Amino acid sequence: MSKKEYLWKLSDLKNIQKNNYRVFSCFACGGGSSMGYKLAGYDVIGDCEIDPKINKMYLANFSPKYNFSMSIQEMVKKDKLPEELYHLDVLDGSPPCSTFSMNGERSKNWGKLKKFREGQADQILDDLFFYFIQLAKRLQPKVVVAENVEGLLRGNAKGYVNLIIKKFHDAGYKVQLFLLNAATMGVPQRRKRSFFICTRKDLDLPNIKLNFHEKPITYGEFKDNHYKPMNKNTLFYKRWLKRIPKDRNIGDTAKRTENGKISMFSFTFCKDNEVPNTLTASNNPVRFDVPGFISDKDMITIQTFPQDYDFNDMSANYVCGMSVPPVMMKKIAIEIKKQLLDKVSAR
Image (cartoon, rainbow, N blue to C red; front, side):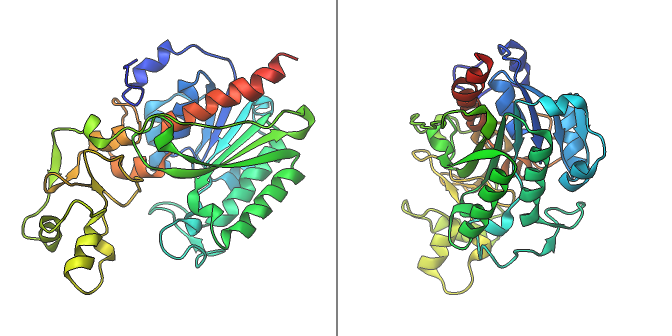
């Protein structure tokens, strides 16, 4: 593999030493979590993904033994599941919770049906976490890992978190909750995410410690020579021209120079001497040094996706923004192996 951990290829996985621990991934999306476990030596034996286009992309990059192209609700309700799924070491999932995003009003969509993306079925997104817990209760893996947005730990969402913890306890799990920043974990991105690390009570495992202090990686260390030029006839370009070093995004220039709505112009800047901000599915970062958006190559690197990933005609911006950075998940998976699973195996 490359000396730079965030620059890697899917073909590198064949050289990873396997540890024989089995993982099943729910809400698999582009496989960010799956790749993290693979990088840590785990065997990702299957996945569940509701979006048929994204599932097709997942299968273009991986060959899971069990692929469930359906909603988590449908999987939970199936009468029969493969016997191997009842012997998992880790059940992993990132239940969509946009109602708790740090963007906008976090609670206004609680309990409402919505599509996460065109082509998907309507779902009550804040219910999905509880279906995930139902699956954990049924399969009883040794460890359950649930990744979610930072906003889950803010404001009114705290009541929702307490309910999640109670449901996990009722399912037979001890719960630890962490707020981690990918920038301290070898990922060139300031991306804070909440992680529930749950262990089966009957295993009587110690608390896991997750402390990461890796040196931040700035945009200038890896930026691509190519970029996507702006249209010079747009207000967007004019606002880019008015940028100053302290600006964090295009919206800052509007606040300084104009009155009126600016929300559609709040695209973040990528500066050579700073760690890139959080990638989202709908926000393509802007280069500070040249009038253009960052390239797909930069997008892939910032998210620590493999350089040879097949996006299968899907938007790299969307897929990366929706996924867990593989290197971030790798670091967590390594600690789960060392601090939890190896202790069970040694008994």
